[in-house]
Amino acid sequence: MKSEDTPFVGGPLDGRVLPVLLGITGHPPKTYRIPVPDAAGGRPTVLVYRRVQAATSKRLGLHQGWRYEYDPEGDTSGRRFTWPRSGGAREGRGKGDATPDGNADE
Image (cartoon, rainbow, N blue to C red; front, side, top):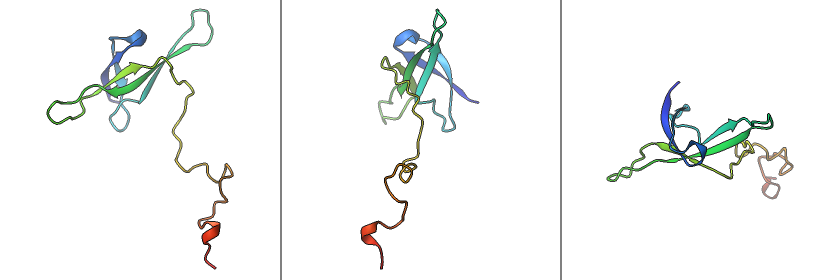
């Protein structure tokens, strides 16, 4: 697996450069979650960092790498990718017919 040294900005990891595994597209993940264990043994605190563009070239405006910025709000809901039209018929938004009721060929 390939990794890329990626700088972290803000939060507890400010100024550190860590190797981050790249995905199949060659980019690091959009969010980077770091669980920090609680000293008392409770639930771990999750630090959330968001991927942003590090810089652009002056002449052509091309992309020049990534960096992670600390997100203090930290959406830790764990939302995952869902297909755009995966839940239509299951949620009662339609019967699943290909032709709408008002345009049926008779």
